[in-house]
Length: 301
Image (cartoon, rainbow, N blue to C red; front, top):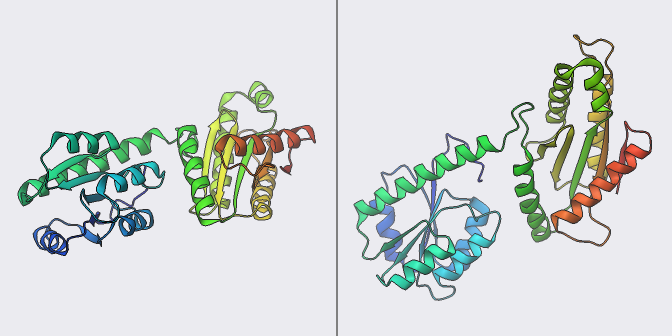
């Protein structure tokens, strides 16, 4: 899923080596409510797609450096761009080219010379469908109780953020946190009290993280934080602020209830692996250490 503000005008990226195609599209599609980005080669197009995350890509099949199939394959292999819909442009009507395009993940296939009214309709249809899918996917990835992202979103974003970390060679931290003795709390004060703690903890997390950080309810009373471009020492500081805020929080309806949480932080598995499983194992080991160490604390793997 590509996060986009609803008020943003859709951005269309045209990747084609022919200047006349760019001029034609700019002229014929100027009233479609689109912002245009142009690339005259496959390499330039891939870079622009990664950087700008357009709403839609028009991609020429025949180009000198990388043909459209190679570019499409690269876009669909990249977690950052694989969800962007692509309409292929080609002078060939051959079914083999169409089949290959769809097998590689293209949304549509338009032949040249372009029938402009038809292309307009296909573009608007693609954008409407993409917005609908984004909306449905967004709703499906929100935890109903806490309002945080859920496990499905976490799995997708961890993979994407690890790829970004590796590509840009920037730090990243992963946190696993768990509410201490949550079952005992539920048994003692009831499930509404447990829900109140979950909602409060989620609110405290949201207050302490940045816009680009990703907070998720991993399952039950367990939460995860993906902190891009964040060194371990900074991540520990974030966790300590959340931990202290929860420890100090009182609950008006349950004045005798005390809630605490434990945190496990990792900035890189010991073996240097960049696969999600290794990072999760590192954060989970740190969380286990915090639990074994007495709970209500932050440990680093």
